[in-house]
Image 1 (cartoon, rainbow, N blue to C red):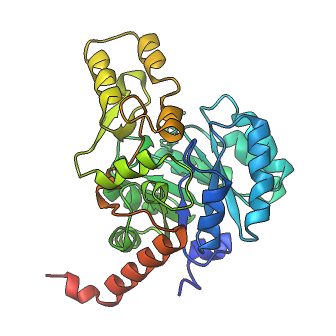
Image 2: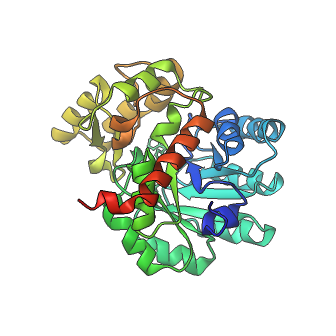
Length: 315
Ligand code: TUI
């Protein structure tokens, strides 16, 4: 299975499933578990001081001999350091988010790094293809964290029509049904974030995992639109305060001050009230904490059974 899939061939992995590069959450332990399970694990560079990121890049090589990736969050003040570490350690795959990856492609393409920008709009997908990206993640607004304005159902087929490079669908995908649907929309693979927060190997606080497991379809809210960078997170006291300030047209500086450090508070401290529990709408689909390899196997098994009996679904 997947022998002729564009993503398994490009990345030299077993299943076309990649793990989102989630700030504070995606460390070497989670990434290695996903890569060992046959997907592509990704370390997030966004929150880490360069020394810590360097340690994580050294650590993952002791945990897996499979390909892995590094996510460079382009709005992060340490994005430049992460880029140089990707070059120094010859990281096989780099994904980017929250900005224009031109400089990343320029620096890493000559080294043979596979570069997969995360995009939330067709125009950026077209631009990065011209600049030399190897594939794109088309991330719909069902995703957690920093999001765009278009749904996965609409973004994925429009990106697939616009570019020749392979498309990986993200946003709202947490099981085999979502993966099957992504293929129908023209994707060659999927990226999942929220479901992998609940991997046993993920070091996020247990309160984070439990909040996702308890979540329903209406559990998330988008704040930060007035700042120009909307963020989806699970509703709590923090998001309520943020919403109230935004509704009262509070100055950006006040909103930024409220938001500062709140993702760390969620992931590391598990502060249910004041943490920013970034999560996709797919939290409503996540039922249990289980090993990354089991997540991958069950998603692929469910996807296969759907595709092999596809007639049955037309009813
Ligand atoms: O990057 C993400 N999701 C993220 S990054 C993040 S870290 C964070 N920490 C604290 C507060 C806020 C964020 C959490 N979640 N996804 C990929 C993504 N990229 N979504 C949207 C975009 C994007 C947006 C605008 C990509 C390019 C872009 O270009 C704007 C421009 O420069 O034209």
